[in-house]
Length: 226
Image 1 (spheres, rainbow, N blue to C red):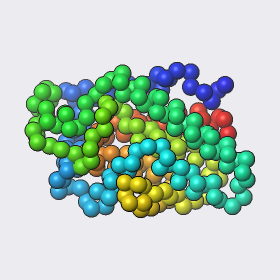
Image 2: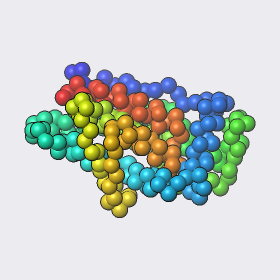
Image 3: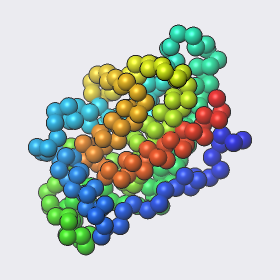
Image 4: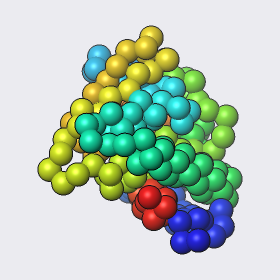
């Protein structure tokens, strides 16, 4: 069946940036500045976004799926296939991302920044008391699971949204007190999720970019089942 993954490592990405590179220093300093608990670089809106996406489980994406399913002209069978494809995409995304996470076992910002003198890079400065805005998840950093989920769902939705249509995508978050957020496009949603993990201080930029790339590939595979 062409819509099923052949193995957990089918979409395993290349390794994260080497610690001696400019890319690593860039990622390190970005999250160090904007993702700190007491950051003065992060805006109030960015803090709200980080806390909205602190809820990182797949159910948060079903509100976005309903935004498309509720469009006039769709029938029950078509919507059932849509929800099934989204569920498959998210399951495969989680399998893929945790395969990669434990393959590379890369450190989170809180560990990296508190040990910035050990990475051999003159562009990173240690901050022994640095802490992230939200609590760091208890699994390796690379790649970003939230980013792969968002992009996987986004790829399925993009295949279902008619050309030229712009449904109001929306969902609510338990970690934001049930508050709703809205996006004008799938790309806007995926980009916000990626940014949120950096605002939160728990991911590096490369990790979110790689996660989104993986997610699109996983979602495009699930689209074959529609």
